[in-house]
Image (cartoon, rainbow, N blue to C red; front, side, top):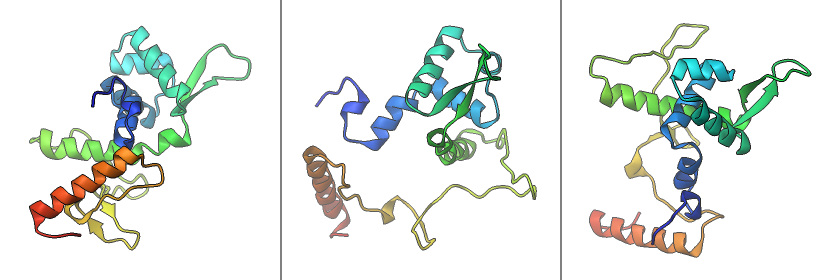
Length: 171
């Protein structure tokens, strides 16, 4: 099945990538997390063309990841601030950074994340159970969620059958 838009898929990863998956967008979010909030500063830090930056900022604002706020009341100039939806992407960007540090920078991480108050390095982002046990992909099973379409339910069923065949039993 061919999809022209990722948001046609019943898949949270595809839907998220449709919104934030373009590489300039990820770098804009990185800058926003580091405190950049003005158009000129985004452009200066990233070296991005004004038209591309304007389009990416507009898309992030239109979809609730950023909000545009006046620099001061009545001002024509604006700043871009992360919304709660945008701030929820922070663990994702940290995980992506840690992956890049581990696999793409043999000489070591270009930037370290530390806790401001203590100077301690942060832990690697991990998937944990609600009880705190760390998990990896082999520990997880996919089941239909409340938003699953019939197509998604069928795909998950086929994935489960393939997993059982490959791993010698059910989960």
